[in-house]
Length: 450
Ligand SMILES: NC(=O)c1ccc[n+]([C@@H]2O[C@H](COP(=O)([O-])OP(=O)(O)OC[C@H]3O[C@@H](n4cnc5c(N)ncnc54)[C@H](O)[C@@H]3O)[C@@H](O)[C@H]2O)c1
Ligand SMILES: O=P(O)(O)OC[C@H]1O[C@H](O[C@H]2[C@H](O)[C@@H](O)[C@@H](O)O[C@@H]2CO)[C@H](O)[C@@H](O)[C@@H]1O
Ligand SMILES: [Mn+2]
Image 1 (cartoon, protein in one colour):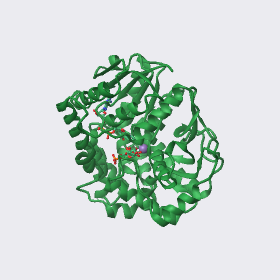
Image 2 (image 1 turned 30 degrees about the horizontal axis):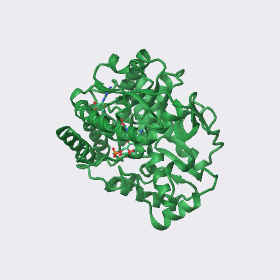
Image 3 (image 1 turned 90 degrees about the vertical axis):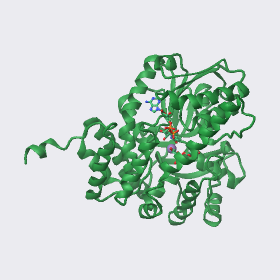
Image 4 (image 1 turned 90 degrees about the horizontal axis):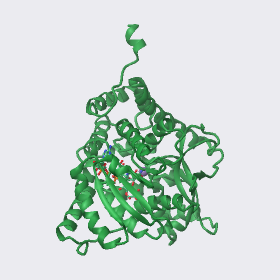
């Protein structure tokens, strides 16, 4: 098996140490020659990198080299795989994305509704620059992007790099949900085969099979409605916010029992309930700053101070394992099946060809080969078309510097609906994002004809 040169962009991310542990756990499936971290924030990256260096020295002695840098040429040259996990504006801006809509009575969420638009308009420019840089230094590298909001980023990258066949956008949420299905069934998550359709953070499992073709969908539905649904992946199992989110699946399956929903659908199906549950002074970003970020930084500090991992507990989670299994299937043409984002082109027959959809695909060394879904029925088609229009309008707003397109996007979104409210949210977001967003201009025709 050829050993791979891996670059992690966003080396200072709160997910990096988990990713390193997953790379250790998956070294047989995805053997590495070198690992390089790249980040624009030297200080944030250094702490994570120094801890990672110790972990790798102890647990991955066969690795030929590990290094970290803020120099893009040094980082991106000679890569086989580039994993991208950046957050333009950091968790501080995530907090604004969540608080602004809540101040106007709308859902405040990282990737759904107005928060997703704000984060999208910040991320698109950086992601385009980054893909250009990667292609300049490593034209043939596989790029696995999971930078959020993945749906909007994927749409922008589709428009910007239409011929790039080695760029794949992925999300761990379906896999994390499947970990809980596996728990219900007493099976390994990688032994389950999903049937699924939708957009990123906006989809449904239509069937859960095992590798022998046995259908477990009804067993899972029954278990959820009778016994409830809990997160089982190590990273989120004890997190009160994720426990609440998984609990909401019970209501979704009771109200709409046809298919099994992605957890993120809660924001679109029960927006008022979601707003009522929130505390604007302690939104998810604040919980992550005081929770995951603090935990990861304390862990890194301890590993660095001790010079060893002997005194800490290091866990492997589905986030890293899933990303790595997708990469391995590309590297070694395994033909494994994973849920990923692809340009539709008929996969969901009654949706536009140019939609970025999330569906199961066979992952090969020629990229993802999605399985045909066929026509989807009215409820799902209606919901998806509205959300897809919102996503496309956000990307239009970016390219056209259009205030109007941004306003249309928010008004269309199920988490907002009301046009005056959309305008208030948009105006506050423009103010908060001056440093990051393209300048949005009002429709010139209307202004001049006054
Ligand atoms: N798709 C998914 O399912 C999924 C799952 C988990 C995390 N994520 C995403 O992963 C990303 C990281 O999340 P986090 O909470 O760890 O954020 P974080 O802020 O802790 O980490 C992001 C890192 O990226 C760096 N960075 C920012 N802009 C950069 C640029 N242009 N070039 C290089 N480095 C840059 C930052 O300095 C920071 O160290 C986010 O986009 C998050 O939404 C996605
Ligand atoms: O609110 P956060 O920052 O805790 O989570 C936001 C992310 O949530 C999903 O990722 C989960 C993942 O599903 C789970 O396996 C585990 O690794 O935790 C992650 C979050 O902590 C979602 O898919 C991502 O897009 C979000 O960024
Ligand atoms: Mn996701």
